[in-house]
Length: 480
Image 1 (cartoon, rainbow, N blue to C red):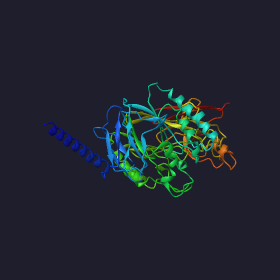
Image 2 (cartoon, rainbow, N blue to C red):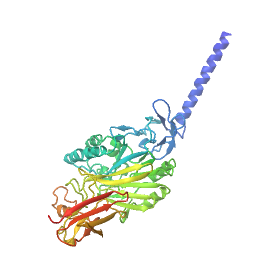
Image 3 (tube, rainbow, N blue to C red):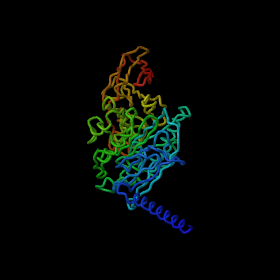
Image 4 (cartoon, rainbow, N blue to C red):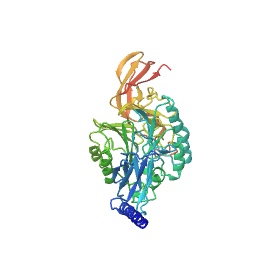
């Protein structure tokens, strides 16, 4: 009897070992699975998390497990963090990815999330073109821009959630500054998403876009990804097909387009899409090679696009559902002063989000009060408008109204025109003005307005109202 029990037991154990081995072989040798792992909350698996290697996108199952066949070109596996979990960070740098070692037969990558209450409303701080090339420029970013952002957060209720984004050109062909740049970002008390710019590519690598992004990837991970906050879905794309420092295409690769299509299959149409690239998808007469394909993929969503690259603020209405904000630069005109080539101050944009809508937006000049949105010039500041006052309203778009009051009497709307900002022209024009980065010449802007006073010595007040109902005023006393 005992011998039968022993025999049955051994047979059961051997069959169990055999079945486990078969299961193991199925998992490890399955042609459809060589990238797998779990997403947990530290206790149990999290179901329904979007996971991708940048080419294939899938969901975690009821146990929090994902399985996929990885692409041979995949560098990372990353998750699109759900809105009811905190975005993992290293300091303030998002940490939602794992490197993929293509030398391994099977790659295992696990993620752990922390549960959180979804944010109904939040504030987005959007920067572009910080671009330090030298230590002293990085010091300005660290000592001026970062403290200004921190002070801005104190102007909102203490419980207000924030998220940030830098729309490319984090440094200016200076990868050695990435550690210092990262340290500066880590002094901002909320997560800051990073976008790759043309100056974030390795200029020593020619003709290989994939390899040229290695410095950025070392510090910030994938060059395209997504993230969820509140009732918004953030998407970051790399729209630079890099050949060398001076030669690159304004294009989103086919692989990214395919990834984007897959990513959006998991996003409800009532979500606000906040998409960021470095190069504008459309800027005046210029646009990406495949911008129309991008807009077609985004069809059916309300979309806000945030871009940089031009160092010149413009808002563009692509269609009734897509609006692009191309930002004035954090570094103005190459850290050559406190002013950009269009006369705007160094600074960054702020978006107030409620649910799935932008309810307020403004440009915050570094070191300036957020109410400062107009710069006035007295008569004789500019030859073409010698007898007129000039107003530069750098965040202006066609939905604003700009009116003038002379000695307390409303005189109607000011006249918009295109020209150079008087101070920007005086400060920058010419090969040796300023000595630092003299190639930063002034540019004409559409954000100028003029009015010719009816009498000398008048008190002139300019009143500008934006599409959100904010009213900004500046006054000139011509008696002085």
